[in-house]
Amino acid sequence: MTTVSAMIAPVSATTLEERPAEVPQRTRVILVTGMSGAGHSTALKTFEDIGYEAVDNLPLSLLQSLAARPGADVARPLAIGIDIRTRGFAADTFLAELERLAQQPELDVRLLFLDCDDETLFRRYTETRRRHPLTADRPVADSVRHERQMMMALRNRADLVIDTTMLTSADLRRLLKGHYALAQQGHQMGIFVVSFSYRHGVPREADLVFDVRFLDNPHYDPRLRPMSGRDAPVAEHIQRDPAFRPFFQGWTQTLEPLLPRYVHEGKSYLTMAIGCTGGRHRSVFVAERLAAWLAEKGYAVTLNHRDLARGGEDGPVGGRA
Image 1 (cartoon, rainbow, N blue to C red):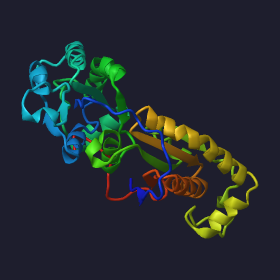
Image 2 (image 1 turned 30 degrees about the vertical axis):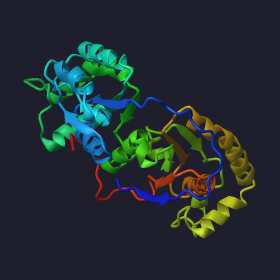
Image 3 (image 1 turned 90 degrees about the horizontal axis):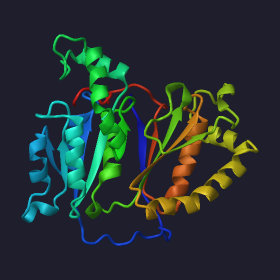
């Protein structure tokens, strides 16, 4: 699935509520776990790219000593991969070790769970002909179901669950950078605006979802049908709908006081999804308008039209790529 995206740089910033200073600074430790085949390796490589020390398949018996290591390296953030391949792995043992770490005041410990629906996992293992880590004589489907039972307690405890079923590798990297970028990288709260087609499902990573199918549909105008919401004739058509202006004004008036509250509460990344039937006209135009409005308010915005051009070189997350 190819994504059509554009970066919108923030313009003149407006006054936002500032978060209280966090002192003393704590060492961030991200424990990365989840279903085998959901993008574990992509996640750890992304953490490494954004400045974390990444360690994969760490035995649980070594977790405490690595995370709480003394010395000059103590301030460097850690991303530690632990899953069913890990020696001595058991969900209850993992949770106990997690709670021990979380009680240490010098550590900021977070649990990330990567998930994916069973059907997609079956297909990934079949297409790549890779063995599931739990597979002995049992079918892959049985192994996946068994693993899901083993991992459910960790999923329920996770600070963040990312479902990679419909994500490309680039999508997963974007989400991880949005949620876990380091303070020294100038990160405050990133906003991701995505248009989508309801035919292909709601983006699972969305925090806020808006349905714009009530607007007049340019699809039924033969002249406009081949165009998209990025074309001026389509934009003019939608703006002529009497419902559009009051909707957009009321919507932005609601968001304006809401967004600083997310910042104040420490939310690092917010995904807004705007959907219509085909993901080509109304949702694309409204997403463009929303992203421009957010940029005017001083937010750093990434804009993505998920279903405007489907297919391409950037494939799904798949396996442990």
